[in-house]
Length: 362
Image 1 (tube, helix red, strand yellow):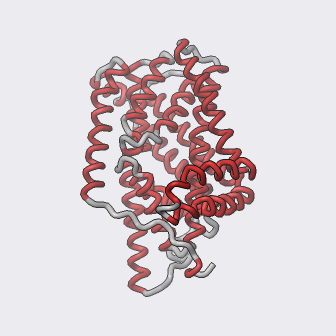
Image 2: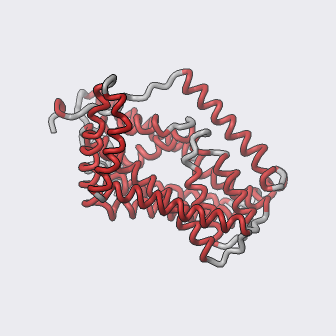
Image 3: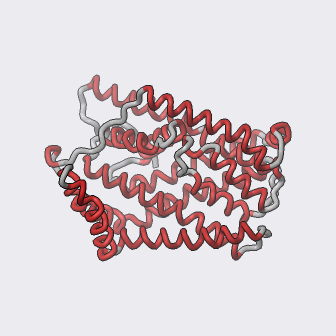
C-alpha cells in the first residue's frame, strides 16, 4: 500500500496541564486507597503488613523480577503476530512504554495507543497495518481478561476452596456473565452473521448523527474493513496470539504465587488463582492509573474471604503491585529514552527507518 493510499491513523497524544493534573489526582487516589482503605478492608495495620514484607529475601526479589521480564517478553509474541515485520525487541520496547503510560495516567490506555502508533510509524510500518494490530491486541486482551475471571470463578465453584456462600454466589454470577460476554465477542469476531447484526445496530444507533457528521455514515464500512483485516490476522496467527498472552499471564501468575509465599501467605494455589484472575479484571478500572489501589483493595478482600491471613494477604498485594506496576514505570521510561535516541540518530543521519535501527532479540 502506498503512503498516499494509507489511511491516516490516530494523532499523536499531547500531554498538557490537564493530563498532569489527572495523573497527580489519580496517583493520589491510588495512594489513599492503598494507605487507608487496604488495611481497613483486611482488618490489619501497616506495621503488621511491614513485618510480613520484611520476610522477602533478595533471592525472591530477583526471581520475581525475572518472572516479570519473562512475562513481558512472552507478550511480544502476541505483538509480532498482530503486526508482521515487528521484532521482539521493538515489541518489548512498545509494551514497556505503553505500560508506563497506563501506570501513570488514569485512563492512560488511550494515550498508550497513541504512543504505540507513533512508535510503530517511526519504524516504517503502514498506518492501516498498525491500526489493525491495535484492534487485534485490544480484542485479544479483552477476551483474555474476560476468560481469566471465568476460569477463576469455575475454580472456586469446582475446586477444593473453602469459600463463604456470598463468594460462591458471586463466582456463579461472574461465570454466567463472563461466558455471555465471551460468547458475544467471539461471535462478532468469527461469525459473519453476528457481525452484520452488530453492524446494523451500530448503524441504526448512529443514524441521527450521520446527517450532521458525514464521517459517521462511513462507520459501518470502517468496522467491516477492520473486521476483515482482523480476521486475516486471527486466522493466520491465532495460536501465536493466544500462546503469547497465555505465557504472559502464566508467568505473572507464578509471580503472584511467589509474592504470596515470600510474605508468608499460605493459601492454596486455586484460591490464589481466583484472586489473581479477579485482579486482572480490575486492572481495566480507569479511575486510577492501571487500576492501582482498586486492584489491591479488591484482591485483598478476596484473599481474606478465602481464609488468608490479613497481614500476609495485604503484603502480598502490595509486593505484587511493586513489581507489576511501580517497577514498570522506570522500565517504560528507559524504553522511551531508547526509542527516542534511535529516532534522533535516524533523523541526524537522514535515513528512513529500517530493520537494523533496533536489533532483533529472539
